[in-house]
Length: 315
Image (cartoon, rainbow, N blue to C red; front, side, top):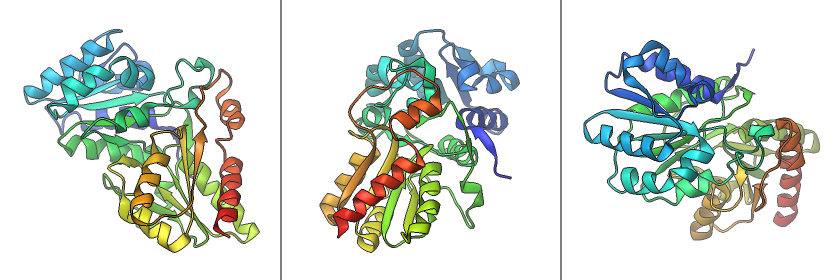
C-alpha cells in the first residue's frame, strides 16, 4: 500500500536520521518545531537544535552566522513567516553572500485550511524564485521529501523548500526506476496529447487526472517538477515539442512560480500554449483544507478541466 504521510513529517524524520552522519548539521526553529517536525531532530540531538522563539529574522541571521563558521544550518518555520517576515534577511544575509543555509517553509499553500488567508502562503515560490542564486523546491510526497532533504544536506548553497501540512499519498515510490536529482524533473505518466507539469501536492492530483482522462482517449503526460528553480528546461522543452501544449499546476499563485517559470522557458525556445492552473491572483480563505482546495479548483477535476481547455487551444 502507498505510504500516506505529510511531507513535513518526512522532513523531520530525515533530519533526525541524518543527525549522526552530518555532525556539522544544526537545526533552528522559530517556536514551531512541533508543527514543522524539526522537533524530531531535537529529540535525538538537542545540543545542535536551537529554538530561537518567535523571531524569524533573528533566526535567519543566526543561521547565516553559523554557516560562516562551517556549520550546515536548516531553519524551519511556517512558509508565511519564512518567506514573508524574514525575506530581507534571507536575501541579504544568506543569498547575497551565498551561504550554505537551507530555509524550510512548512504549512504552505491553501491546505493550511482553517488558518485562513493570513497563513495560507501562496507567494513563497515566486518570492524565493526571484532571489538570485536561490534554489526552490517543493517535493510532492514522503519518499521524495526524504530524498530532497538528503540531497540538500549535500548541496552547498542557499535553498528554499516547502513542506505541506496535510498527509498525502505517495506516488513516486511506485514509479519504476525513479531517481531524485536536484534540478531535474521526473516523468510519472506517459502521454502524447498534453503535458501536465505539477509540483508539491498537485502532483498527486495530476496523476489522478491523467488516469481519469484515459477514458476520454486523452493521453496526459505528467511531470513531477520538484525543483522549481533551477527549472529542468530539457524535460519542459521535450514535452513542449512532443505534446504541443502544457498545463502547469501548483498550490500557489500562478504569478511568478512554476507556471511563470515554464512560460518563460517555452517562450524563449519552443512557444506552445501554456495553461497555468493554480490560485488566480487572489488570497485564500478559511475552511477545512479539502473544501478550500476544491473551492479554488485545486483538484484532479480542476486539472482535467484545464487539460480540456489546453486541448482546445491546440486544435
